[in-house]
Structures are given as structure tokens and as C-alpha cells.
Length: 420
Image (cartoon, rainbow, N blue to C red):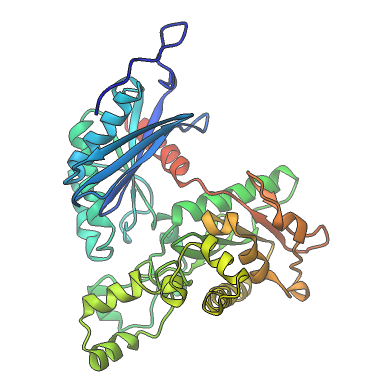
């Protein structure tokens, strides 16, 4: 990487270098490292980007800050080098992380097991526990540990905080988190329903509560369904501020139909494919997680392509959409009963926020249950929290943009400050 000439303002400051305290948020995948530098108090993102193809022949990365896009291409053999690429991108953009008043580094960790019910200051013990929980999330926790190790080497004097996707759902009622599996086996191998996307579900449910409270609604017993619909997808039932159920289980495979995951499926499919197709456990696991879902049904997992294909008369895409929506409606119905009624439904994440066809199909014909969508409001493309139900709808339906990075940054700042 070569550094461009510094671009200073009239006062001699480099643009984009913040005065207020910032948090660097990292999301480490097996072959990627997403990052964001933001002010968690002012809720301002200073820069964001991603390093991709880690460990492959040739990596690539970029940083975006306002109108600036700083690219990188070259070898990225591991997460240690990926972190060096991140710091180099900031340097090249004139936004040195050493001068950005970073007071904490927040790490997204998928699996916290039953041990971690809240964000944790990372020390050697916490790091090793996250690694140990990799047995429950082999696709996610090992990568998180690699990111944590790399970041702690580069920033040894800054507090590092692990924020767990499962933390919100450690409060699930016992009957919701327990599988009807032999109790001794379940206990020995830590098999229970942990959920995922908890950071998003907590953030969105809090946003809905705050909005309704500002309008004078008593939200102490608010009955909410949150639908986090991205390439990975999950649903939750939240009453007041407590989760009562969620669709993901031991792993993120359970629940809704997803971009490449089956969601709910008869567990005997594993045995059937092993016996009939001669597939190994790893091959079946890959099939269910990486080449099923919408991708497996119609050859596409981007809903922009899927909706375009449906409009063009593609029958496979139409069936895939119907399967996707059918599963969604099953969860909405069951959670309404779990909650004892329903006050709000919130759609969030990439599909939930941006695909009106999914929202319309999910809620059509439910007027008898007090759910009435406003077609015009649903079709409008707008930013921010917005209501898409009709004025006479007994259930408030909203689109609520999620911001997991902001939530991680705010929780990391709180933990870092309390650790002083």
C-alpha cells in the first residue's frame, strides 16, 4: 500500500480523525474480517470496510469513509496480516487508528454458551473459553478467536470486549431452551437452544419499545415479534424486555429458511443421507449449511435476483419464495400464541428492511388477527424506523433498521469504562 498525500483541513487536522472517544468493532469470519470505527455516543460511523479472501491465493480489502474508498489487494495469509491490512488502510486514508482515540475494541462472538450472559472484557481466560465453545460453533468461534488474538497483538493497551450473539437468549425460559433429548446426554455435551443474532434482536426490540414509549404507550408488557431476515435469518418473541423464544437453536441452522441453510429439518435426514447416499457427517453438514435454503431451492440467495426471477416467471424462484414465507408465517403464528397476543411485528436486516414482497406475503390475509398492512407504506423505500401497517391495524408492523455494530460499540464502551 502507498500512502496518499495527507488531506488536512484549514486547521491542519486530517479529516475523519475523530475528537471524541471511538470504538473499533471487529467481526471475524473464517475468511473475512469486517471492521467499523464509530462514535458510540454520537452514533456516528467514521469508517468501515472488510478484508476478504483471508488464507486464499490473493486477498482483497477496502475501507470507506464518506466519499473516500481506500482499496487493497495482496496476500492475506491469516488474521494477523488481515489486522495489519486494516491498520494500513486507515493509515493510507489519513485516519491513523493510533490517533483516533480508540478506547475499546469490540469483537462479535457468535457463541457464548450458557457461560456468558453479558459482554465480557477479554483476558486469557475469556479468550480460552471462547475457543472452548468452538465445539458448539465450529464455523464461527475459531475465527473470532483468531481475530481477537490478532487485534490484541496490535492493540495490547486498549480494552478488548467480546459481545456474544447468544447473550440475549440466555434468558430464555427453561421450557424454550430445552430440547426433548436424553437429559444426561444433553448435559454432558452442552446441547440446548442458544439462539443467535441476539445483539440484533435486543437492539431492534429496544428501538421498538423506545418508539412506542415516546408515544405514551406502556411498554412494560409489550408483546413483540422480531424478524431478522438476512442471508442468515431468525425470529424472536419478546415480552417486555425479556425473550420468550427464538428460532435458532444449538447452532444457527435451526429455524427459518435462509440464504444457504435449510432451517428446520427432520434430524433423521442426517441418517438417511448417510445410509442412502453414503455421505459423511461433514458432507451433510456442508449440504445443510452452505448449499441448501434459497440457494438450494432455486440457485439464488440474493433476493434482488429472486424477486426479479419471479417477475420473469421463474417457477423455481416462486416455489422457493413460497417455502420461505410459509416458514415465516408458521413462526409468526406460533409466537403470537407464545406471547399470549401480539402488539408489534418488526422486520429488520437486509431482506426484512429492503424486500417489500417478503413482508407483504408474510402478512397477507391476516386481517382477522388484527394485522393490516398498508400497501403504499410497505412499498416505499425509506431510511429509518417506519410503520408499514394501516392506521386501523391492531398490531403495529414496523421496519426497523438493525445496527449490530453500534450495539456492539455501545456495550464495549460501557464495559471498558466500568473496567477502569
